[in-house]
Image (cartoon, rainbow, N blue to C red; front, side, top):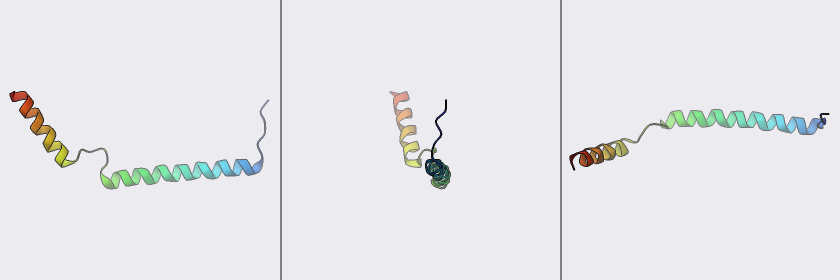
Length: 57
């Protein structure tokens, strides 16, 4: 037996789901703008130098 939810609760859940979908889209857009996922050039250089140093040691 499924309990029916009041219309007000249904509307609130629907609004929250829309907000969540919008936030996810905005987050993805910001990550694309900032180039998220890629390594910062300074970090890349530091790691490369450390690998070379460790390899030579």
